[in-house]
Length: 124
Image 1 (cartoon, rainbow, N blue to C red):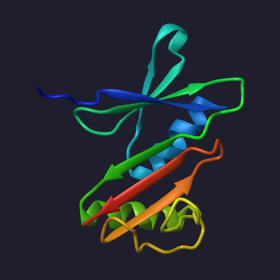
Image 2 (image 1 turned 120 degrees about the vertical axis):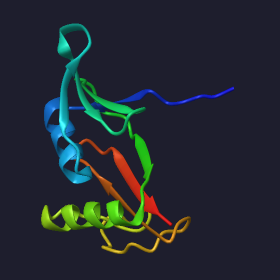
Image 3 (image 1 turned 90 degrees about the horizontal axis):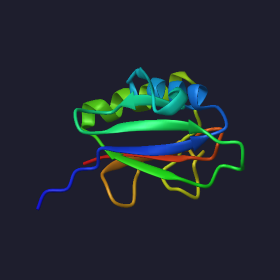
Image 4 (image 1 turned 135 degrees about the horizontal axis):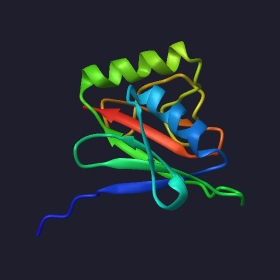
């Protein structure tokens, strides 16, 4: 049996702002809006995966999305985080120490968006 994750939803106070921030950090683009009343801002990560950002009024729950990338892509993401002054760290409890030594990969970073979603990018 083959199982592939098609999409995931990230809750945000402002779906458009959160989607743009994620897309810019990852070197991707906002692909448009989906769903009833276009409530999902879509960022296509690759041929198989989309991340949909959905505005919710309540407090946003802590969420965690982790991505495995090649070394060149990691360098590009790290460069964008630095240029955009996005705090990052090497573990989920220290997301601002500016370190890239990762406990489970040769290099990796964690950062949070304004809604508290924890993003992780790692490479071997």
